[in-house]
Length: 346
Image 1 (cartoon, rainbow, N blue to C red):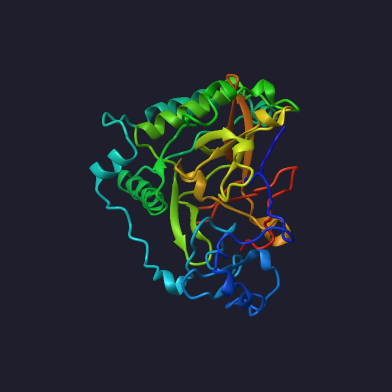
Image 2 (cartoon, helix red, strand yellow):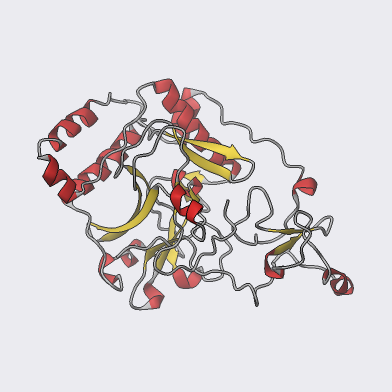
C-alpha cells in the first residue's frame, strides 16, 4: 500500500484558530474586522495571521512564499521581519565535505558504470515488466557537484536543520524497534532485492561525494524548491525521505508542514511519522502540487512510495516520468487519505 500524506492531519477551517493571535484581552475586540493586506478579504479567518509587531493580517496562502500551516509561536510579516536575501553556503570543498561528512577517499563512478552494465543484461520486455528502480546519475563535473551540495547546505543552514541521510531515532521519541513493516494496516510492498541494491548504491555514491543531480533554489513565491540539474530518467531514485521518527499520537497537533507518514498501523498508537524539522536531507525542500487543479497535477513528476526494506518501513521519492534539466520537482502530498490541504499551493 502507498501513502503520500505529508501532514498527519489537516487544520479545521471552522474550529482552528491562528496560534499567533495572542493579544491582551483589551485589544481582542479590535481584531474582528482584520483583513488580509494582500487580497483585502476577511474570509478564511482560521488561515489569517496577525503580525506580532504591526498587527496587520495576512492569509497564509497570500504570502510569498506560501506558508503551508500556521506557524508556532510569534510571527512577523515580511515588512517587520526585514527579511534579507539568502546567503549561499561558501563554495569551499573542505567546508562542504565536512558539512555532509563525505568520505575523503572518494572513488570514481566506475562502480556505477559496472552496475549499469550488469543491470542491462536482461531483455527489454523483462525490464518493463519488473519495473526496477534506477540509481541517480551524478554530474560528471566535480565542481558542479560541489555547487549542488552547497545549494542544499544553504537551505539546511537557513532553516536550522542538520543534514542526515538516515532515519534517526531520538530518546523520548519512537525507538527503532517500533519501525516494523509487519504492523502496516493493509500490508506494505516489499522492496525487491535488486531495488535494495540500487538504494544501497545510491547511498554509497553520496557518501563518496557523487551527488544526485539536484539544485536547491530560493524562489520568491515557493520558498526553497528543488530543480533537476540534468535530465533524470523515469523510475530513478531521487532520495529517501528522512528525519526523526516519532509516534503519530505525539504529533497530532504539530504545526510542522513536512511531517511524513512512515507507518499506518492497525493499532493507531503504533503509527509512525517522519519529522524532518531538525534532521533531514533534500527531500524536505521538494514541493507539493495543488492537487485540486488539472494544472497542478500536470506538474507532478515525482512519487512518494513506502516500502518494506529488510523489515523496516522506508519512504522513497522516485521519478514518475522523465524529468528535463531545469524542471522543478513536485509530488502529491496526499495519498488515499487526502487530508492535507493543497488548494492554495502555487
